[in-house]
Amino acid sequence: FSGAGGGNDIQWCFSQVKGAVDDDVAEADIISTVEFNHSGELLATGDKGGRVVIFQQEQENKTQSHSRGEYNVYSTFQSHEPEFDYLKSLEIEEKINKIRWLPQKNAAQFLLSTNDKTIKLWKISERDKRPEGYNLKEEDGRYRDPTTVTTLRVPVFRPMDLMVEASPRRIFANAHTYHINSISINSDYETYLSADDLRINLWHLEITDRSFNIVDIKPANMEELTEVITAAEFHPNSCNTFVYSSSKGTIRLCDMRASALCDRHSKLFEEPEDPSNRSFFSEIISSISDVKFSHSGRYMMTRDYLSVKIWDLNMENRPVETYQVHEYLRSKLCSLYENDCIFDKFECCWNGSDRQVSFFSLIVMTGSYNNFFRMFDRNTKRDITLEASRENNKPRTVLKPRKVCASGKRKKDEISVDSLDFNKKILHTAWHPKENIIAVATTNNLYIFQDKMN
Amino acid sequence: QDTQEKETVAPERAEEAKLKAKYPNLGQKPGGSDFLMKRLQKGQKYFDSGDYNMAKAKMKNKQLPSAGPDKNLVTGDHIPTPQDLPQRKSSLVTSKLAG
Image 1 (spheres, one colour):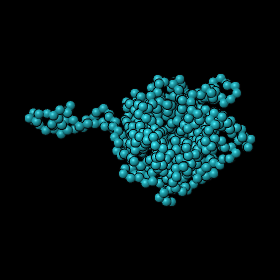
Image 2 (image 1 turned 135 degrees about the vertical axis):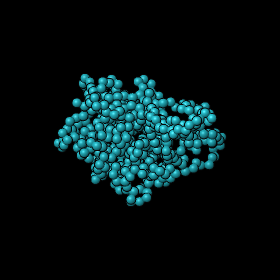
Image 3 (image 1 turned 180 degrees about the horizontal axis):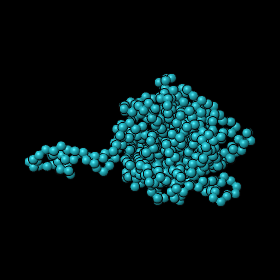
């Protein structure tokens, strides 16, 4: 292909980093999800401690034309608390698995956050005025002696320091026996789906006491269980279409118009595998950890342990492109199985929806180990490896690409596979919908990078 | 094309051989039932007096009614005893991202 859009690489620069500096990471501080809202003005994170932190982008300062607004804390609240399943004597983790923003309809912002069992709709609203001048109360709330009141006045609203309040408006509970891995808001903005290991439910945002089961892959005999649901997402434009991925590397597209229970897929996306290439690890590394539609809905991207694949919805038998994220790990699978890293669930994301003007302008981003993250640019046909590290702290300095030496003689500035830190994993990344601004989560820190503005 | 694929997969096979050498009893079907069942049951399991007493009774009396349909669920002698009770982690401070 020739670069349809002019093919200039984005020059990524460090912008901000949030979170504690110390190496001793508390469990609760482990970031578990990152998501921009539809305008990109707000950036939400969820963590293992059940907390949500929302950052807001500052209004652009016209005098500082060389940088975009910074993200500062806007609101933080405890979304989920630890709970206990008394029947099974199992703890229900408060870890936030996913956050999804609703499109903004009025002054308030709404998001869905979920842990393993319960989904909550949160309203985030601003209060910047308060009533003053009551007749029976002083400003500090003490009641006035009614006998001292000689005239009546009408209370008026006066400006106050901005207060951002988060309140839970809906709690969608008790619909999942297994652990919720995905939530996805429908393009009708009225319904959403939630998926656990074996089932997918459809909810109406206004109704909490019931949900419809639309996919159920639980076998009658659990001994026959061969695959689980790993991710699910609604199509961005067709409100009747959704996809779900499995631990066996397949993606099923379902149409809710076909039947009430979408157990039979409309399309099955699967790349054929040469059986002679099969190994003990084949199925584990083929398990899809994330699936994301492109903005147009014509393409979707899947992430498995070693690669990212782009699929054309019109072609089920193989992906149109495959990008190797860290192929050098193939010769380390034994130790990665022993230390459980082979089960790490990496997410992936597209560049901002506003910029996805054609197939050629698509860019893919995903994380890796050693706090590295990777981007694949369909336009330039190039890929790059960058690092989220406090050592690259200078704003407006372009990040230096990293390279891993798979074997043989290590060049200067390269890092060998055996030196990679597998405890430093980037599982969650997000791309601003309009600008070239990205949010990258390391274990407990959030990095924000922007492209260099001239 | 074939040679390239074999070159790609050869390290994977070597890794498999390493793993089998270390753990000779490793199941034939890694993606099968046991593995997935473990995935479905993730979560800290706590002491359950019913399960504990069932396990104790099992020691004395071999003739117990057979387990129900969900016999793959972790119960009985697989669960912690009072002595092994894990400490419940403490709540709940503001996230350091907001600090």
